[in-house]
Image (cartoon, rainbow, N blue to C red):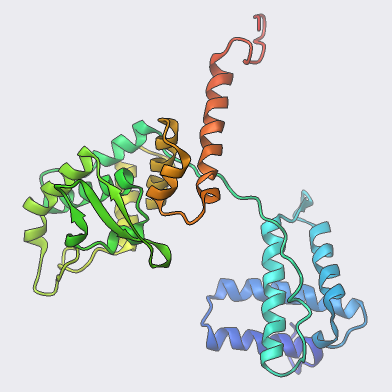
Length: 319
């Protein structure tokens, strides 16, 4: 918006941006994205002779969304991705909801507009070899190294979310039974079996490392930081990134990549998708089935590389 006195749509947009700044404390980059979307929306409404955002109806919002979908950007005139269109709609929805709450409007024209369907990205699991190198990266001779080997084995061996792993207490681990009790999304509890490597790493950590890291404020937390407090998700992500680099892995590796790898390697090994669903704590099997697409992609790649009638004809060779 231009500097100076603002009226009409521009004034409404500025009030909304002030609300985002003061009430929600959004970052500068996020506010800049909102501002760009609102400028575009303002220009669209003004081109249709509307002086206030409250004059827009559902048909106008749909037309605006269609115009964004049909437009291009950049020197190579690329079309906007579905995710970008969805972000623009999210901005417009938030703007109109604000005007409704602000009593500047008596209806929300964006409420019934459906967001574009976003293509779901496939997970990018690690190879078994890469996982093995990462899991072997921490030193087995230091308290921190023993701790890190234990949570690495747990993330991969049980397929836990990093938030689930850092929330574990010592009492949640049943080494003799070879299982761990996990509190997942929605407060749903599940029991996940522990493999031989995870059990061994946890036994070593509990016997040789955790006692030296514990403090009077530790309470029941399973994985501790150097001050005796509960290990955080941020610390786990930072440590894992360092171990991946030490293992010579060039791609970025997050804790969730180990969960992806857990699921994909189980399915590759013949596990039933509903068993994997239960182990991961997914509410719907449809969420788990995304991993079957990854294994199918792997099979096709292996087939195309190995089968003589699948490979492209080489120059001077035969199919």
